Image (cartoon, rainbow, N blue to C red; front, side, top):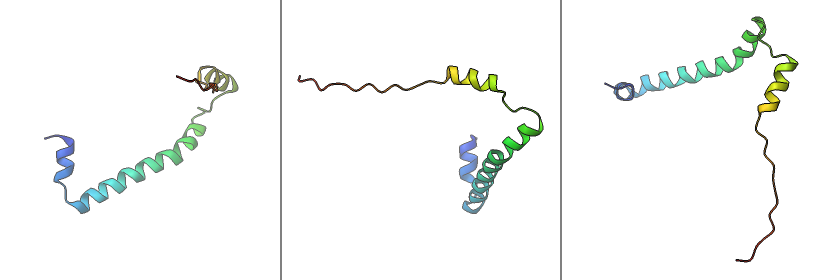
Length: 69
């Protein structure tokens, strides 16, 4: 039995509870991850930020002139 079919076999109220639990877990992770990284000393240095800026893709917009076809 696949995970999806197991989930679908749950009652609607239980599925709602599972969904709310997953949402809560995600929100808690987003809010607590920065605080946990600070406590573990995993904050990025300026050199790390510069290295990331070098490999970050940049978008350059080039205006085209209309061509008659």
